[in-house]
Structure formats: structure tokens, C-alpha cells
Length: 131
Image 1 (tube, rainbow, N blue to C red):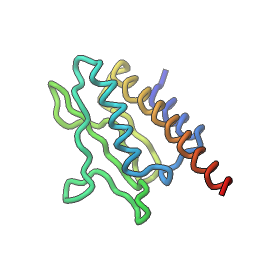
Image 2: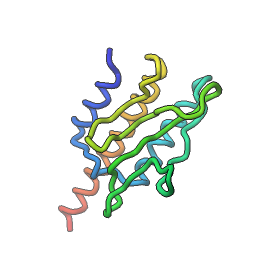
Image 3: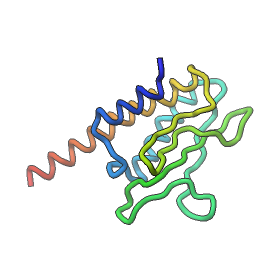
Image 4: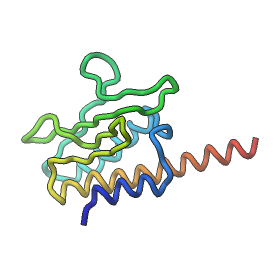
């Protein structure tokens, strides 16, 4: 089973786009990932995202919506590996280095986050229709 493709498809099924994602949403994704990684004995934590400077790994547009994000993680035997990458062309990459067990941590956390985003989006559209 290809968990990476399932997660990408789920994002599309939820009718989500990068314009639905702001910095606060990325921090929530990191929170979910850290919670799941804490349960694992090898992965330690997500690296802090950087939105300024030459090493920035988050790019937002003028409306503070996502253009690109390269979220990284570190563990007890590595320092800087891909967690989830939101490429500018719309492709979402998941831990290309990881085995199936590790991939499942990232993709299941991502799917949980998609549910959060979808509910947030539905809540916003309900607010707009009631005004």
C-alpha cells in the first residue's frame, strides 16, 4: 500500500489547496507530527520552521497563504531529513527516506491535519453564508 499517494489523494478529496493553509495551520501540523513522533523510539521532533533569512523553509504569499514549505525532522541518528514538503508546483512529498512504519507516522498525521483544515474551511464558509 502506498501511504504517500493515499495522503495526497486525501488532501484532494477534502478539496484543499495551498490557499487554505496559513502559518498557524503549519504549526498545528507540526504539533500533530511531534505528538505522533514522541510515541516512536527513533524520531525525536520536527525542526522549527524558518520564514526569514537565507535558510527559510516556508514561503507565504502576500495574503499569508502557503506557497512552499519544507518541513524537516531530526532523530537520534540524523539531523535534517524531509518530513513533509509542499512544493510550489502543488506536489506534496512525504519523508522519501523513510520505511513503511515511519511513513505511516507522517501520512496518518497529515490525514488528521487535513480533517482539521477541512472542518476549518467548512466553518469559515458557514460564517460567510450566515452574514
